[in-house]
Length: 346
Image 1 (cartoon, rainbow, N blue to C red):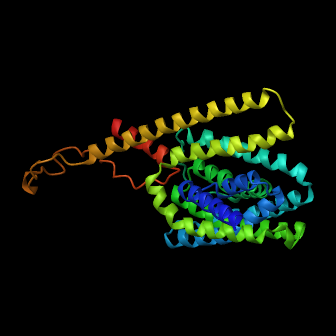
Image 2: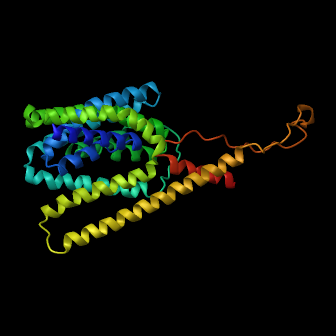
Image 3: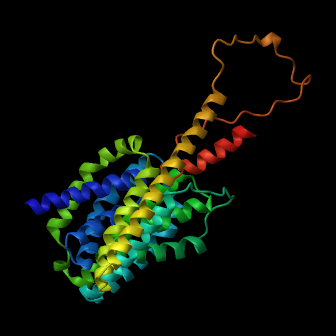
């Protein structure tokens, strides 16, 4: 019972992170399961089976809020499913001793990516046109394979690539990626079922992760309003990096002062990333406050009667005032703030 409660807390923590960042449910839960001693294939299989329920709930929610581009879902979900099935088959075919360093290396790389990603603002180039299959299909294939072999990675691989392309609204990027992950999780679970059999799934673990995730879903919706995603992403990235570095150091049989030096270097990098994330968050908030102040009417300013306004033909047209920005999504806040600051300065 104590172990199931711990696993439920793991699912709760993973869903809180995923709800605040739009990614990292698999990364967080797989990392914590590996740290608890669960075999790599069993950890990934259990996480993906639990994700079928959590991603279904997330997909329905995004659909109801109009955050899903079904054309993108159709073009990325099928290649993602093929990649996830192949990754699950590959991970099931190698030994636990070989799988642990492989999985830890993938998680370590993705954790380092989160550190870099959230320590600086995201520069999104707004491009015209729609995303094509020749871009979405390879992206889905790679993201699905990484997701199954690493126990997570669909969101960290697919979401930033779609955001940087600049051809989708951030809310639709997150909604489409989360919705398509339901298909990816199902394909990965099928691959693990064929490769490991039903005994490869730790059903109590799956149930505990699912219960924890469902409990955390409404809390995550509240948390995203309170905790800055910029800082949370850097913090979680550091946890993933340090946790999986432990597995890699053991696999490399590195002793003496080497582990201490590695942990010290990683800890220093983590601290720098968090400081940079806080600075980026402050710049974003200052830019937003500048825009709000520029758009707010002067206090006590008298209303100008319509008769006092000169005809349009008598004076040149004034430049349009930028519209008030919509609430930025957690992943888009830095990029939006840079563009808003540039608009105010111009």
